[in-house]
Amino acid sequence: EKEEIDKKTVLRSNWKKLILQALARADELSNTQIGFKKGLIKDIATFKTDVQNFSTDFTKNGPLIKGLAPMEAVDRLSRFREETKIRERKFDLYHGGEVLFALPHQEYAGLSRVKKDIKLASLLFDLYVDVIRSINEWKLTPWESVATIVSEMTETMDSYAGRFKKLPGKLRDYESFTQLRKEIEDFQTILPLLAELSKDSIKARHWDEVMKICNTTFEVVGNPEFKLQSLLEADLVSASEEIEEVTDGADKQLKIECQLGEIKTQWQAKEFLFSEWKDRGVHILKATPLVVEELEDAQMNLQTVLTMRH
Image 1 (cartoon, rainbow, N blue to C red):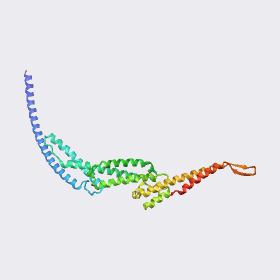
Image 2 (image 1 turned 90 degrees about the horizontal axis):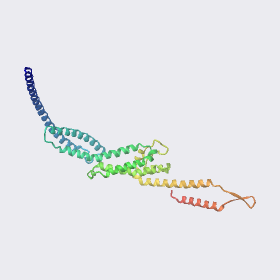
Image 3 (image 1 turned 180 degrees about the vertical axis):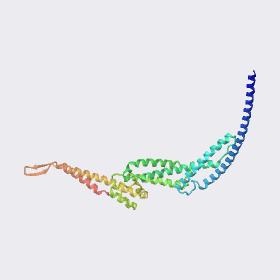
Image 4 (image 1 turned 60 degrees about the horizontal axis):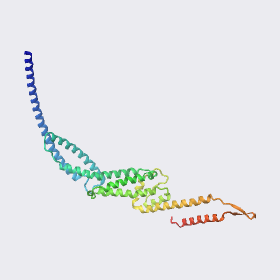
């Protein structure tokens, strides 16, 4: 029994020590909590001021300033987008602290507005970047390969035009909106011209006409180093109607060349049969009516070709 009493005495003593230690730790945690809570409240107050300043800076220097050049706006959007992400992480951190310490949740109207405007600006400038990037990539395409990617370029540019049509109306007043529309429309105007100029009907003489129309010089035929960029820089859009006349003429000329080639081939391969006339040693052409008919058809076709403007 004495041993059991001693064990109880030791157990009671240890239990009292444990309670005292628990109370001490609770006091320490309470003091620590107070410190953390005060620090959180201070950080939140600082953050509110920072958000207000950030919102003001965005209003004065953001990407949606009217009259701003498109690429400058893109750079500003990128900067403010990254700075917004930093503040969003802080917002999540402080929001979690408010939940932990049962503090009222703070509202940051400036941050919400900036996020909304960045989302709006991203619709415009992300599309602008996509369009410019695609055009710059296509510029480096050798002219000999352009014919194989015209359909791909057309599909891509049509998709950009579709995205452009869906942009919110409030973006219409911005310079970048106007510039983006011009980039898309101009390239859509150029694409049919590229398709026509890449046809087999276009010869060196037609390129001479194009250069004269555009008041420029470049070497296309037999030049594997010739890039699409040179044509895009020749301002084909302003001379699109004249260039269409050249390509239409080239198609008609090719058709004429094919007709002449067929006539030439027909008569080069033509065999004429002769027979002796009444055993007098004079040879005359056999099947004369058929030959004359074919000859008249050929002459009529040639006469038609001569009357063509091209």
